[in-house]
Image (cartoon, rainbow, N blue to C red; front, side):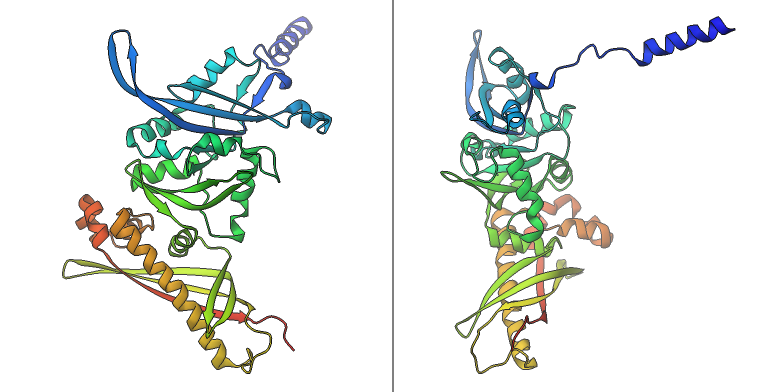
Length: 382
């Protein structure tokens, strides 16, 4: 009995304490921080047959682990590798002939797609199909569209953070301070494209020594249809109830008003009259008056003045939202503001009538916007 117990203990130790047969030392790994995807062209001669497909230029950036360990010491803070191939992971395997590092995608923070790539639906489908199937990369990786080449955005070294992927993730986490872009991950975009066939992806604007993330690319049926500016993106976020905080600048009688939105709420109602779908959207916000005028005959403690300033803010936001809705409906014809989702969830009787023709119905939906602004705090005054 004692011998049997010893044999069992030995066997358990063999199983539990077995070595890792496929381990890779940390110094031999390339922890890919960001990936840039551009398109090279199409029409390659394979044997004697012309095949129309596009090759991708894929750029990888990863931190220099040695420089991090030494605290800099004159070492390059990051490495950039770029090559051409049929897809992301094909290129990563091709690069093993040019690098002594094993690429690891478990810590990837961002994927930047070039503007030319998203203008072709088949190409974009291929990329997202690969991202959906891969087990090497998580669903929380941020996705961005570069205005221009993704490679150029990757090669820029931001002054505040040397590693591009980490820098972009930091900006995404700071979205609570601004609504000028809407952070999106692989896990956000794939359901959008499967369900509503349209989505917004934040835009990157590369500069000489900096990267700006503002606005969004509008994607419909896996194809780029246009850009939304910073203010237009904010309007979309107001409609979709995603604004956590924001600054509104308005003008009242040649005096600038700075209003900080600390809370926002959206309510929607919908109905159908004479075959016309009508959706009412009410955006209610409250916040603080950050700036008005130091010396004025009007006192901001006066309720009448506060009401007037609230009206100015309401008109400002309403006009911006109305303009954005018109652009989305008439120019892009892409329901990125969730009207179809609202009808599906709360007005199924209406949705059942229009769901098969929603792409044609959405541009004709009558959307009425009402904005309510409340100044809760006026700051410290005499």
